[in-house]
Image (cartoon, rainbow, N blue to C red; front, side, top):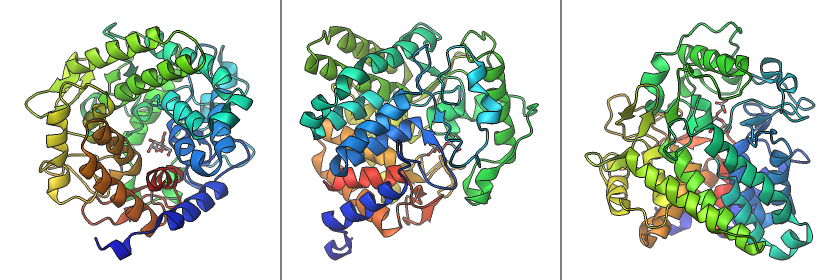
Length: 429
Ligand code: 2M8
């Protein structure tokens, strides 16, 4: 790409800041108006990372509003519903009825969770403006909530007792229709009681969203979890998966909590110990023959041997034993050397890869941002820099798309997508 095609830092900053302002509701940022009209958990983490450069107080409030919807058991919910603005999303508050569940907060939320990038985001937000952060007691207030959140993962989601947290629904992974979940999901009934509605198809093309059968299974699983009071005691829950992306983000966030503890004059050792335990347990997901981390299907006690971007995310961990192999895989024929501009969500050589279909081939900006961080951690500066430039260029050129075709850069999904803007902004600063 020619240098003159690349947007300058000021262009990125002003376009991204304008979009983030537009998507700000007064206490949080929606992922995108229309398709995603509420507050999403890991979106808020990524959005705060970008917002810190242009509106540090809003970045803090982004995380504070999510943490204000914490459940008594410590979970941070997948979605905080904003009923005043828009109810065009399913399943919404009428499905979850969270206020009828003991321990749920005042504000209506989903019962599920999303990947724990929040402590990592909180540390970055603090460092962007420590004076403001201290004046607002941002870390003092956030720390106990983040400790409780990670405590929930350790106490309620470590189904095998091996040190990893499990997701009980594909939505919890944030990578909804990743091929990692195919086999486990195929065993889930597609007969929910709740009538499945698809308002999402009014905002995005059907060919770019999960299919009808997948949605029926998503609803069935959500219904089962809800009907067990979202209490994580359902021993026969049919979908229990250990995701390398979710757990790597947990470990990085645990390391961030250690830094936050130090900043607050508290003991950082328990956080470092837990991060080490998660990292050690992650090694049980490593697939040496593929040079990548897979997922574990806890119900079937089997590893899912598929090469997805989720399996590259452990690169963010310092001292990762297989970092060199992961970098080779990332550079190799399934990912960048398939001629890709950005790292795709799924091995481009897989017969069922589809470069326009959501988490089954397209490149996502959040994953590429995480990989830039991972490459920098492992001293792969030139590759990190070239990926960062592609993130910025494709984000700005296409009006902050949700995701892109990794080969052509063609935009897909919704536009004006908040984390695309926030993370491009972060990389441009
Ligand atoms: C997508 O997931 C939601 C369900 O949570 C959906 O498809 O309706 C995913 O890309 C997820 O990672 C993201 O957090 C969410 C909002 O951007 O959209």
